[in-house]
Image 1 (cartoon, rainbow, N blue to C red):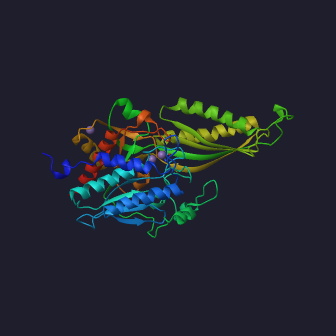
Image 2 (image 1 turned 180 degrees about the vertical axis):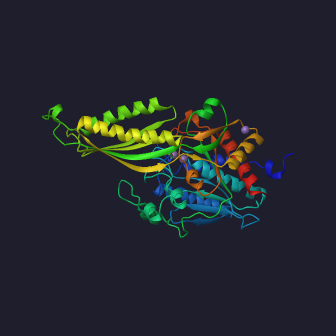
Image 3 (image 1 turned 30 degrees about the horizontal axis):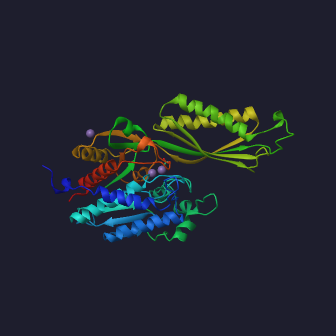
Length: 414
Ligand code: HGY
Ligand code: MN
Ligand code: MN
Ligand code: MN
């Protein structure tokens, strides 16, 4: 027999309406969202979110990295809280759901408890983490990374975008440089709900992903140094062309990544040639490289292969190649009890579900450094994300939010 708490359900229409209202901030003509970290659009999104939180009487704290903590006090205020959260910042051509869904699903949980007059024993906290995407400021997940102690506050504030603007300056400019130290307090358990951003749940026709961990990520800045010369008179044999070296390295590395394992991932999302003139062989080409693998040894193999192949291509082309590692987020395994809480909630709600590892990075990676964590996935159309066409079904979003509600209640108690 279900008890009161287990019979609670969120308001799916209200969740959808909040998602669509937030999606209007930074809306792009193609139907996506461009709300990059600490831009005016991010500020507008944060302001709207805080207005909603204050409407239900929650307490708000902002830390030195601009991470927002929204607290709904429990009947045992000194007990470590149960936490949920995600991010409001998007990719430049992002969608309506990546990150935002986790934040607004957490809000919907708080709204539902407020409506029903349910007081949890442990307090609940909903967090918005700064710069999860790593699109404007590298590396990704830096708000949760500083908070968890992976990076210093000074490093976090000093990270600059391509225009030279730093996180510290931008936090101050948009009014989100909080007073609270960016460091963890005891947490009983944490859950994050997110769209899968891959094709598995949709292909398997299942609604809930019970996330057991996150694959490893390594970011590199690879610079190819050529000799600038005239596109016309200079014979091909006399050139040291960085684009030719980049093409050779990418061809070899893509082949190795595909041959090594189906789980291996390689992405070249940002390429820049200098001086950037069509009729001058570039002096320099900069490549921002993203390598991933679910196993530590697999990630290490890709890491070593990159350096070995860069040496070989340098030898073959005479183009000097510098490889600098920008970020290393090792594979993470989540907490078994939190995983079980998600699995039990999905079962109790009658949702088809499967255990899976996340291909995308999430703030839960750093939260898991200081607290027991698991995540909840729901399908997205075609597995597409980091794309303006990103979309998800209202009933899947509702199911994921109900699983979040039940997993949090199971750990917070009522
Ligand atoms: O890169 C990632 O996986 C995430 O979107 N930050
Ligand atoms: Mn995300
Ligand atoms: Mn993302
Ligand atoms: Mn199960």
